[in-house]
Image 1 (cartoon, rainbow, N blue to C red):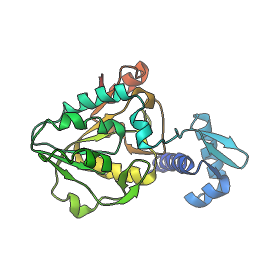
Image 2 (cartoon, rainbow, N blue to C red):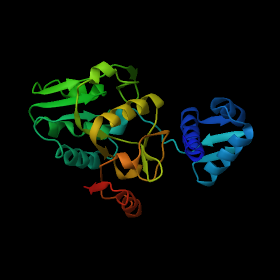
Image 3 (cartoon, rainbow, N blue to C red):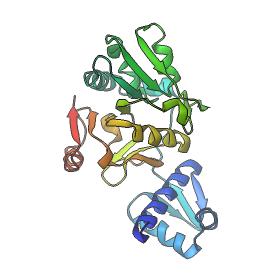
Image 4 (cartoon, rainbow, N blue to C red):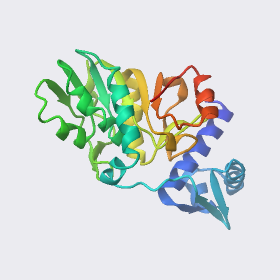
Length: 256
């Protein structure tokens, strides 16, 4: 791993731990990342100049974390846009596919449309998705084990390797709390991110489903670089400049 890569990774991780903790001192960050306090101060200064955190006396304060509301609250935010995104995303799924749905409210919006398909297998870590499919006996639902994350009503952690052995996922649909050219798709909660990263590696195609509020935002950690993403489905209010930049990274952006 090159020096520049290690630097970028450490600074991204600094953003992540700050988002989780809210505020940390230089001493705390130095101990966490096993580097000198001088190095941490340089990291914080660089991240502050990029507008990714706020320097404080002896530490730093996260300014990137959007409030993480409960699933029920989030489900009613941008509901019309999420409904359109969910319908467009479901149109990418075909008879006999095996797909992954994460625990985002936007992926949840796909369910009414997916129920019309038969011979479908859905892998999900979302308890809400699983419950919504109880009346769809023609859809096979697989859930990896993990720990309960109450905010997202999901199972998180590293999926069991034997659980997914031999399972070929055609498409994975992922919500995100942020999308940017530099950081790709980001989310809060390190366990949630670990789950998503693991599923991204197992899907042949990656589809991001997120409304226009998420563009230009950066959350705790990256779970998919733009190079890993095939399609982004979003609403028409997405900022045109950022949309063009993402398209330049060979990502198909669908506006609905």
